[in-house]
Length: 67
Ligand SMILES: [Zn+2]
Image (cartoon, rainbow, N blue to C red; front, side):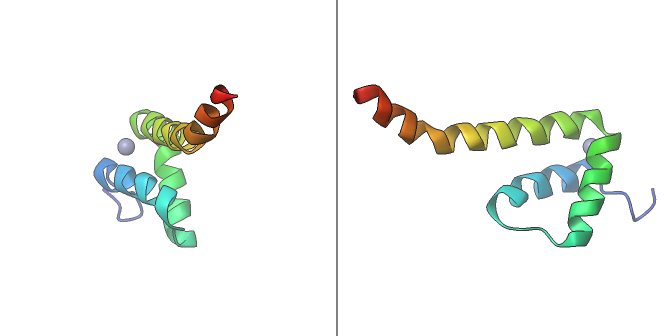
């Protein structure tokens, strides 16, 4: 496998890390390439991004719900 290609393990690790801290431009490009070519990791990265957004919004939503 070319070293330009991330393994699925590395791609999923970087997808999670991208939610915590910025990736380098190279990491971003290579990760995106992997996500475009690998359906499994593409789904995984969408799911964790969605969960992250949802859990950030949760306190707000609960707060609104009280009123
Ligand atoms: Zn993959």
